[in-house]
Amino acid sequence: MLRLHQHVAKQLTLMMLILVFIFGTASYFVCKQMEFDRYENLLKTVLSIIKSSVVYKSDFDAYVKEVAESSGMRVTIIGDDGIVLADSAADIEVMENHNNRLEIMQARLEEYGTAVRYSHTLKEDFLNVASRIKIDKTFYFVRVTTPLNLVMKSFYVIWMSITVIFASALLIGFFWISGFSKNIRNEVAKLNYAFDALANKEYKKEFHFGFAKEFAELGTYLKKLAKRLEKRAKQKRKYTAKIKLMSRQKSDIISAIGHEFKNPIAAVIGYAQTLNEDENIDLPIRKKFLEKILKNAQKISDMIDRLSLASKLESGELAPKSCEFDFDELIDETVASFSIAEPSRKLIYSGEKTFIFADAQMMEIVISNLINNALKYSENDVIISLKDGIFSVKDSGIGIAEEEISKITDKFYRVEGRSWDNSLGLGLTFVSYILKMHALELKVKSCFGEGSTFSFNVNTLKKELL
Image (cartoon, rainbow, N blue to C red; front, side, top):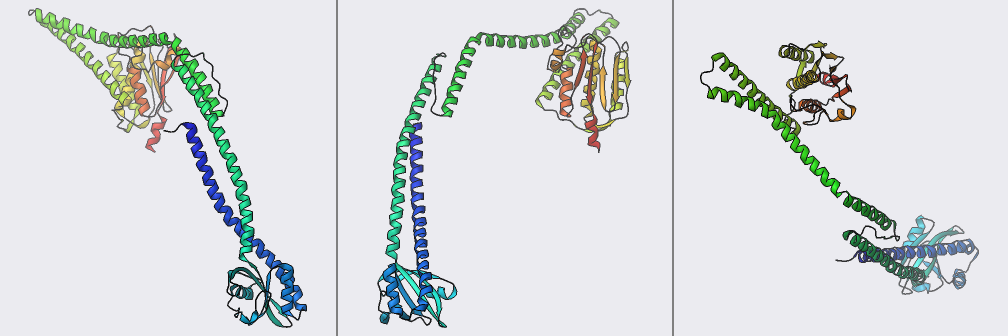
């Protein structure tokens, strides 16, 4: 496996070779075309001069030789019928009719005709440019040609000059790549030194990176990492203590659940044991003991159901089965049930017809738990209302400290100072889960020592009915 600097050097070298190939190929064709265009424009310039002066000449043969001698180019005058009338480099007697020559055919249609072809007369390739002129009402063609090898020779001189310049730049590039690779090797060596220091817990060692911003950022990160590792080493005992605390809290929760089950189980065992040991107990007392056993067994069953419900809500096993119903009627029925079960407590409810689309059973659990929570923490009247889609339960109990409001919906959480004797601490957890399943939010306003108000807005559930 190659090292980083070798990968970089390899990729840069490959890139430069590809650039050489692309540049060489592109420059070859571009320079060649440019040189052809230059010579073509040169021939057209010569042609324009000839066209302006040949009209005054009567001896075409002498004129083309004179122009050829001064310009170094081959000049030919051709009749409109394609017969060669004069040529500066060949015997016109042996020259064929030029009507089918590409440059002549093109010159009939355009100002200039251009063609590169092989001359059978001179046995050589030529660049030909022709143009049509009119002398004394007679049309002629004037053609100027230059040997193709002259054009190519000029092109090769230019292209080789460019190639030499590019090759020199390429050589400089290879030296630059070598230096670049060396700098990377040095920076990687510094990284290895830094990682060795961290591995050996030598967090105070200094290391500096300066070749590239990325290496400098790595160096900064490693310094921060060293500080973090050093800090983490110092805080190891704190983390261990935190883990122990979490373990203890977990044990407390298990102990609390055990304590909740302990009282009703002890009652069931005590009454059952009494009945079992004394067969002569009076019937009224026996019946009373059996009622106590049934009541405590039901309490155990209810707590198991609540734990099961909490687990299912938390895992998402239960999904709302929504339907349309009158929320006001559901609240009224729930309040009536609590009034029968708690005849010594006063529940005051005021509401208005509000049809919503939700899971009725789940919403009953929400209402029941909020009312039960208010009864549990308050000895005075509980105010319940449904107005403008806002359901609220207000008590005048102990209230909740501000720092505890965000925690009261946590599973098994109890307000500080309260025992585990009355419930499992799952009521508000149920409320929070169910409201979230209906895209609702429980809002809590509380003043410590004065009371609390729990509320949520069902107006979004009314929109489902539209």
